[in-house]
Image 1 (cartoon, rainbow, N blue to C red):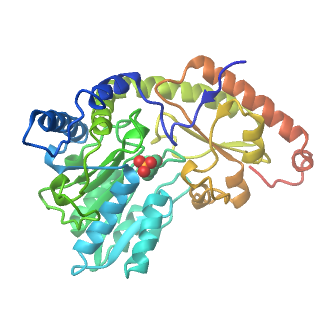
Image 2: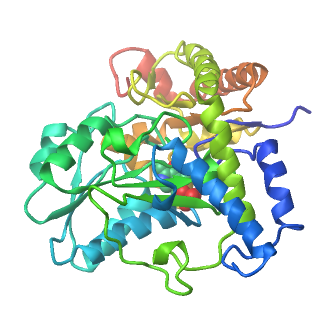
Image 3: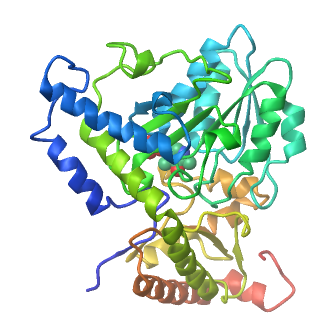
Length: 398
Ligand SMILES: *Cc1c(COP(=O)(O)O)cnc(C)c1O
């Protein structure tokens, strides 16, 4: 029996062994509380947190004082959205976002709507891009914030953040970006891009789960944020609670490695992704999603017509992939992202997301390609609809 193959790196990534090595001492010898400044135990922990803060800040061109550690991107996005809404209430109540955002943004916006916020949710084109003119037009006198993700977690499409940042800057509104998938995978610079708030997650970049951060711009303009967690005043009052020192050290190390290996990882992972796609796309009635010219290297989202994703995933049990996003896999309805591209519910249900990563091998890609090819052939072979569609006449899929 060969071991299962992991191609679900948008849901989470395996821990890099180097990250684990960096974390281990902070569980035992260096167990101090980073807020205890009166003794060496606490000071050692604080020094480790400071170093990690510097590494995270450096990767996005921020100042270490602008990084607020959280339990992950979900919490960072909640803090950014709710925190800005509460702090800017006198100024306005309008938030502009996009239909293809992660649930951490969409559900938080829904919650804010219940608290009196006005939310505009913009649609996207077939590649997953928001129309920039529509975005500019959506901003009005009451707009306080625009939230657009840096890289989509299902189709990998990269947003033109520099253009969006120019629009928000000119309009004098804040720009928040969910960079859970982009941080550590593509170059990001908050100054060059005009980003005011940016959410990251450690476990998407080979770090531990349960850690993340929110970048909060400290100058030009200084972002005002209402805390969502009150207590000891940690993280400059923006997020109270004893810091997860080993987790933060892990995030820092993951960021350090990402900075060093981003270019080579992107090249290697991208070529493996292309190898997988060239095989899968050779199958008939198969369609690739996302923007091929601006896409995460590890992402491939493919619609196999007449092949329900749940049936396919049952057949290919040895390869871990996903239909839609894992975060909503409790919800059986087809992906809101694929449908936002203009696909039908059925086409969305025929779509599989492959997520390759740093530890994916060529042998794994070849075996996965073989298993998928065989399973798709078998499922279609047993499908009366497939037979009808291929006899000509009916063309329900693409
Ligand atoms: C994973 C993910 C999140 C949530 O991050 P957590 O750290 O797991 O809370 C948010 N947005 C996107 C785009 C993601 O991929």
